[in-house]
Image 1 (spheres, helix red, strand yellow):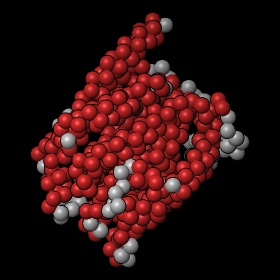
Image 2 (spheres, rainbow, N blue to C red):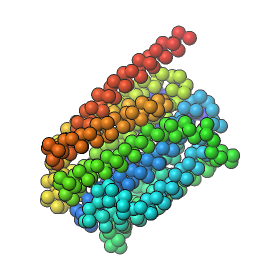
Image 3 (tube, one colour):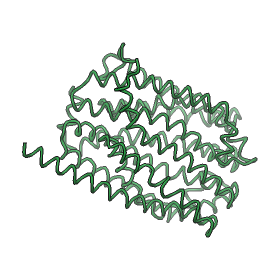
Image 4 (tube, rainbow, N blue to C red):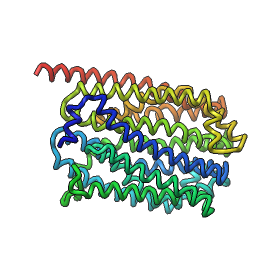
Length: 452
C-alpha cells in the first residue's frame, strides 16, 4: 500500500507535482495530437473541412459524456474508499465500472450510427460542411468506445497510484496518431476519413495497454472475478459523482449546437471554421488545467476519506494558482498573437482574419476560467455532487446560452463572440461564492478534529 500511503504522508507540493505532471503531459499530448490532426486536415483538405470538423465536436462530446460519467465517478470513488482503507470495495467499483462503460458505449455508438446525418444537421452542418463532418464521424465511431476505455481508466490508473504509467499510455496513442495521420491523409489520399481511421487505431492501441494493466494481478487494484455483477450500492455513487462532468459534456453538445447554428446564421461557414480554431486553441489550455485537476483529484479524494482536511485545502490552493496562471497565458496569447494562432490551421486569408477577430473578443476574460474549473473538480473529488453539477452548468447553461440568445440580436456576430467572456466572469463570481462557503464548513471540521 506504499503507493497509496504517500497520498496521506508526502508533502503536498511534491505530491501534486508527481500526480499532475504525468496527467498534464498525457492529456496535453492527447490534445496536441488532436490539434495536429486538425492542422493536417486544414492544410491537406481545406477550410470547408475545418468547418465540417467543428460540427463534429459536439457529437464527440456525447461520447465523452458517457466516458466521464463512469470514468470520473469510478476514479473519485476509488480514491475515497482507498483513503478509508477499503481495498475490496475499490475492486468492486472497478469491476462494475467496466461493465457500465461497455454497455453505455455500445448504446451510443448504435444510436449515432443510425442517426448520424440528422444529428450533424442539428448541430449546424451546412450543405458544404456536412460531407466532411459525415466522413469523419462515420469512420471515427468504432474508436469512440476505445477512447472511453483509454481515457476513463487512465483516471482510475492514476487514482490507484500509477500516474507515470497513465501518462505513458496516453503517449502511445498520441505518438501513433502523429505518425499515421499524415500517411493516411496525404500519402494514401484518404482525406478527412484518413484522420478518423488513424485516431481509431491510436485509441485502440492505448486502450489495450490500459486494459492489460487492470488485468494484471500485480497491479494495486485489478479486475477480479465476482466483481462484474452490477450492484446498486456500487454504481449509484459512481454515477452520482460522474453526473457533473457528464452533464457538462451533454450541455456542451447543446451549447455547441446553438453556437454553430447562431454563428452560421450571422457569419457563414468561415465563422464556423473560426469557431473550430478558437475551440482547438482554448482546448489546449483547458486540457492542461484538467490535467492539473486530475493530479489534484486522487490527493483531495484520499485525504478527504482520511479526514486530513489541512492537506486537502493546501492541494486546492496550489492547483488553483497553477491553473489561473495557465488561463492568464491563454488570454495574453489571444489578445496579442491571434493571427499567429490561426496560421498553422489555414492559409486562407479570410479565415485568418475571421479567427483574429473571434479570438480577440472571446479570450478577454479567459483568465478566470482556470479557477472555475478547479473549483468544479474539487467538489467532484470530495463527493459534493450537487455543487459540482451546479458549477459545471453555471458557465455553459446558466450564462452562455442566455447570452447567445440575447446579445446577437443587438450585436450580430460580435454578440456571439462577446457571450464567451461574459459567461466566464459570471461563472467565476459563482465559483468564489461557493468555495468560500465550503471552506467555512471544512474549517469547522478541522477545529472539531483538532479538539478531539
